[in-house]
Image 1 (cartoon, one colour):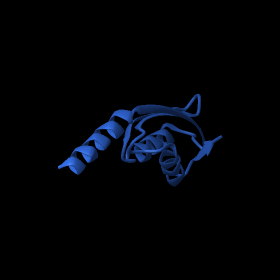
Image 2 (cartoon, rainbow, N blue to C red; image 1 turned 120 degrees about the horizontal axis):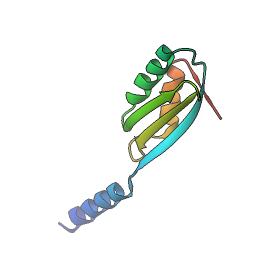
Image 3 (tube, rainbow, N blue to C red; image 1 turned 60 degrees about the horizontal axis):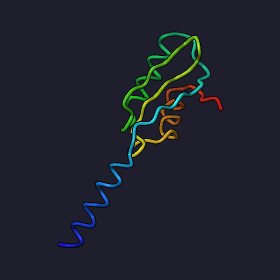
Image 4 (cartoon, rainbow, N blue to C red; image 1 turned 45 degrees about the horizontal axis):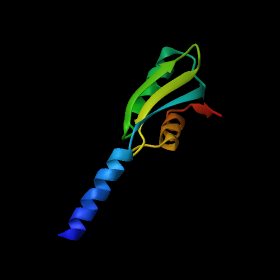
Length: 88
């Protein structure tokens, strides 16, 4: 019984540490609204991504993700799989 309580406490504490995180990425290769939609769709398919919003004029993608589930690397990989490049 004690082990279960410890495990439950650990799970709750790690959930409490998880937080939404906003990430802004510069994207290369966008030329139209279709490119934006393709990128947003690919990024939103990543488990843990809560939102993705692209701005063609700024060539930026704003993403909100649950950092306990998704990573910035996963988002960057989704952008690359959609056919675009994340600038550094």
